[in-house]
Length: 149
Image (cartoon, rainbow, N blue to C red; front, side, top):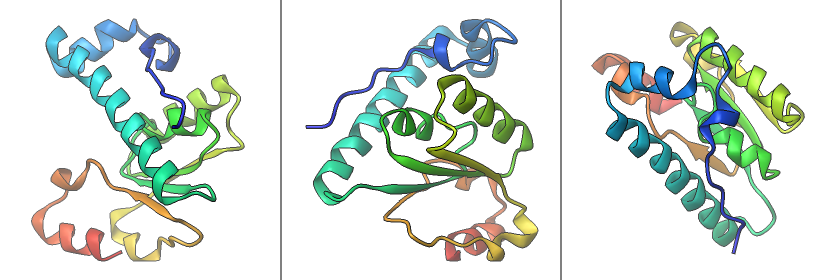
């Protein structure tokens, strides 16, 4: 069984504002904040269990629309090579800063993608593809293009 990971948001946040106030501003209430933290732990632990079961020789992850690395950073911290691809330069930068802070920049890569050039993305040498969130942010016509890649 893979080592379980439990999120400590204080170690994840960028330090520009208190993590709880920042999450509360985004999610509007403390119930949703607590849900989001638990949701992260559940997803990371589910992915760890799945990797252990189906990827006995290790995993390489592409986390598409992975934002600042909410899921991939904990996985990289546990030694799993990850590539986070997001359309937000701010999130890409935040993720890089967290990876540097944790000393795991060699295990995780952050890339910005442009929807107009989505077909240029390559997904080679990957055995795990995460697309947990993000599809709802695309216009209907763009969803088919994104999913086809």
